[in-house]
Image (cartoon, rainbow, N blue to C red; front, side, top):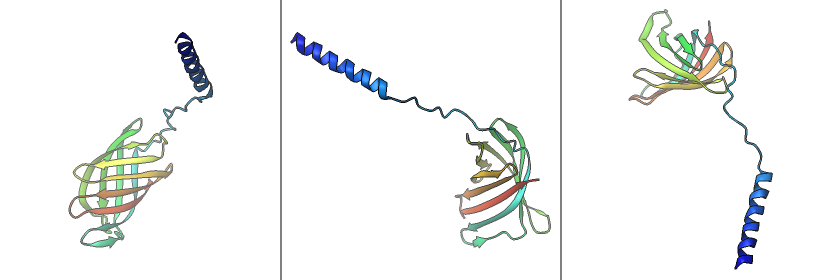
Length: 147
């Protein structure tokens, strides 16, 4: 019985040592890429689909994302739209967002509405996809440049 216990303990210790010697250190995903400064006005075009209306390129309409303040990777501001004559439409909507760890991914939530997710294509250019599940639902691709 004593020999069996010693043999079992020896095998267990050997297994622990082998496992400890063959494992590799895991990379930490805590590093954050340089955080881009989004403060300013981002303007551009939209193309999308609205349930009940269909596909729409919002020809002549301009979207503006005004990032008013930013702390690290978190920012806030407002979204507005103008028609082809430059007249504001749909009002101004407060929003807030975050920049992903990679310094490129962006997620935005709008007050009383949908959300957007996308990425920075360049320091002064982003493409985001807006989605709103309320009735009637809508989805759009927004291409914005910092002005």
